[in-house]
Structures are given as C-alpha cells and as structure tokens.
Length: 498
Image 1 (tube, rainbow, N blue to C red):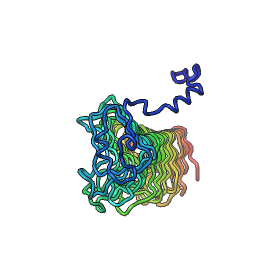
Image 2: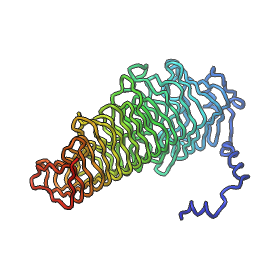
Image 3: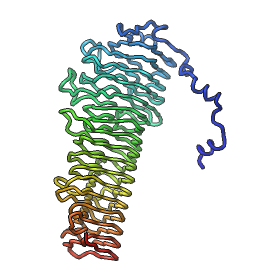
Image 4: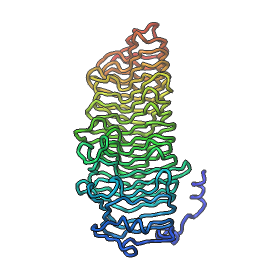
C-alpha cells in the first residue's frame, strides 16, 4: 500500500473541529497587508469611475486587494510585474471594461500581472465576473506570467468578445520548476471573427492562451470555453499542461490544442454542436508536439462535425490515448488521425461511433513508430462513399488486438485495410457491408479473428500487392478472396457461409 493508502488507514486526518477550522481559515492570513478597495481605498463600486489609478496606488508585495460586491469600471490597463505574493479577490464583484474606443492605452488587457522578462511569484486572482455585454468591450481580462505559485479560480466572462483583440486570458509559468492552476475559468459566449470587429487580429481571439514562455507546469481544472474563432484552449508551449475536466466546445482549429512535454487531457468533455458561417475546421483535440502526450477518460462528441475528433500531429513524439468515447455525426470526418511523422501511439479502451463516411481511425506514415490499438470498438452506420474503411492503416509494424468493428453502412463500407507491412491483427470481430478486411501489404499476421461481410462477400481480401500473409485459427465467413503473389499461410481456420 502506498503512502496515501497507509495514511488513510492508519491515521485520523481531521477531527470535525479541525475540519471546521480548515474551511474557515481566511485567504487574508496569507498576506501581511489586506486592502478593501472600497472601504480602505475609496474605489467606486457602481461602475462609474475607473479603479485603475487606485490599483496602481495600492498594489504591492505581500498584498491582497479585496473587492466587495459591486461593479468596477476600468478604462486602462493595470500593469504590475516582478511582484511577490499579490492577490485580487472578488466577492460578487464584476469588472466592467470601457468601450474599445474609450480605453486608454493598449486595448488588449485589464490586468497584466507579470511579463516574461519580469514575472511575478505567487499570484492569486479569484471570484470575478467580467462583463463584456456592451458593444465593443471585448478585452483580455487576465494576462499573467509568474515563475511559480499561480492560482486563478472562479472567473466568468459574460458577453461576446467583439473587438478583434487577443482573447480573455493568457497564463504562463516561466520557471521550469514552477507550478500553477487555473480553475473554473468560464468563457462560453465566445468571440467575434476579426472581419466583424474594430481590431486587427487574424481570424479572431482565442479562449485561453498559454504562451511559448511557459516552461513549468500548469493545470486547467473544470474550465469552460465555447465558440472561439482561433482555438478554445491553445497551449503549445515548452512546459507541461494538464487539462483536468471541463467542457471545451465549438472552436475553430481545435477546442483543445496542446504541445509541450507530458501534457494530458483527462476527464474532459469536447463538443461540436454548432457552427458559424465562418467555421471550416472545428477539430476536437489537437496534439501538436512533444513527448508523452496523453488524452484519457475523455468524451469527444461531434454532433455537427466539420473537423476530425482528435489529431496526433507530425511533431508529436509519442501519444497515449485511453478511455475515449468518440461520436461523429452525419458529415464526412475522421475520428482519430495519426499523422505520417507522428511517433509511437497507443489507442486503448476506446469507443468510436461514426455515422457518415470517414475513417474512425486513420494511421499515416510508414516507419515513424508503432501504433498499438487494443480493446477498441467501432460502431455506427458510416458509409464507404468517400473513405471506405473504418480503420485505415498505412504504417508498418502496427498492432490491432481485440479490435471490434461493426459497420453496416452502404457504398462498400469496410472494416480494416492494411497498407503497412508486418501488421498484427489479433482477436476481435470485423464486420462490415463489403469485404471487411483488405490486405495490400507484406507480412500481415491475422489470428483468432472473426470476419463477416453483411452482403455475403468474402471475409478477407488479399490484393495483388500483398504477400507473406499468415491467417491462423480464425472464423472467416465465405472464405478468402486471394489475389496475393504467393498465397497465404493458413492454420486451423474455419470458413462459414453467411
């Protein structure tokens, strides 16, 4: 038993009295100076006078500024860098930015807290609503770069980001040993495309950015982003990014886009259920670059698809995909795509339901590294009109273990095509309208599988480009269509009529 289990079994963590004390401990105890921005500093909380001058006056190290209930107008950026232990905490507090044309100075940010060449340490921002409901008030609420100790919680952006600026948030941990967390950051009203805004930004804003200056670890926990023109969460970095839970929906390019090292998406919900006229490619998740990238226990639901569910890009050195539940509606899109130069990839314990033409799994490249699929189920009524096979494997040395495909759709729909050499297919049932398994390559080993064509065709087809094929202890309805150069090696198979 590990340390956590041993502690739970052998010690009392909290008495009821201690638990109560822990929950009532004030955030204020972490600071030597606490400022009530209204009572102590005289700020206006009716949304009339700008609070930026007061923030500049009272900000300091080891300082917490509290915002009691009210509306707080800001007509210029508050910039504070190089700080140590600074906090902004709201209690039913709403930030109200000035109109784009009335904002004094850079029309990009309300708060710039640290910068890459002068970051802060220990930053807390918590408990604010940012009101963008008035026209031309889209602005970045928080731009934060800290070496270590970032904590952001319970931030809600209300209203559409309509000014063609960078999007509501940027967070980065600038030290390789630093850590940070962003919890419950919500921006579900999305952003306007650049062509409809006063600012000049290609395509439009991003929901949350994590920049190239991020080298530490940051966790996005239970965040919500919807309808952003240039990615929902864009975190292609030099550090580690954890996406833990939350809902990411309807953004162009990708609702979640990651790069770095050891990045992971876990327990998230990714949805495409609406489109703007400008949307052309709303991918679910895009793994851009780096080693040990992972997506686990995550739902990807493409009800109105126009992009792939998940793409492992060429610069991704290795990827692990487990426990995915993917559904793709009635448009031609792929499920999981492994690009030609992407490294070794595992796809495990995953369900894909696909309702229109497209590959449920598409594996590209030749010798970039093994793709291993195990305990994968593919269902749905996808047809073969545009992409014939549920699984298209163009890579050498791949493995399909206990992979089940049931594809009764029209137009020559098939289950599995092997275009790569030395591919293993072990256990599982391949069932499709046309010939379910097609081999175009050398060295395929097929063992203990069931293959059935719903239209009474052969269970396996060996084309003239195939050779050195072994088929062992399998049940193959209606036999094998053999055009191979040397004929398959056969051991203990059964051939049934369907």
